[in-house]
Amino acid sequence: MPDVSKPRAPLVVAALFCRCPRCGLGRLFEGYLKVRPGCEVCGLSFAGHDTADGPAFFIMMPLCIITAVAALLLDRFAAPPIWVHFAIWPAFITLTAGLALRPVKAAMIALQYRFRDVEHGIKGVE
Image 1 (cartoon, rainbow, N blue to C red):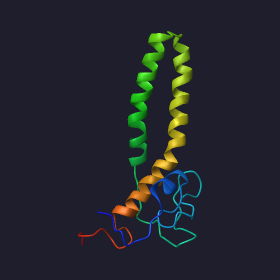
Image 2: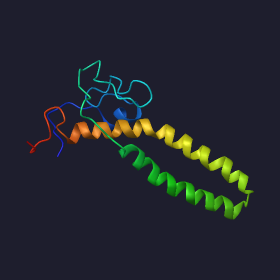
Image 3: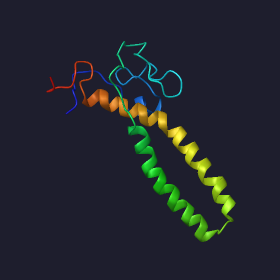
Image 4: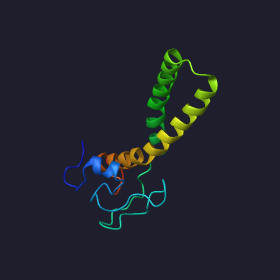
């Protein structure tokens, strides 16, 4: 159950614009994927908000299925030479995964902020 007493930005704002999950104004990343130490606007510490390989998993699993189905449909209905597949699909996967990684990581950090008490340790764990 989320803690409704702590302020939080809308999940869509935090995810799509890669903003602080508390205020929605401060930048979440410095560089491409490196999480900042804290929010420069509200002072929320981002230490402890670790997403590990979660964003990559949630991007690659559906992306693999979409790519496989699209490649099979392209081959079935257009029957292009094999070099077309070698040109299209690696570029598609790289571009799609690269564009989706930041917002998905930001969404996972925002969800951790909402559903875990990272600032004071996890509730119930000593």
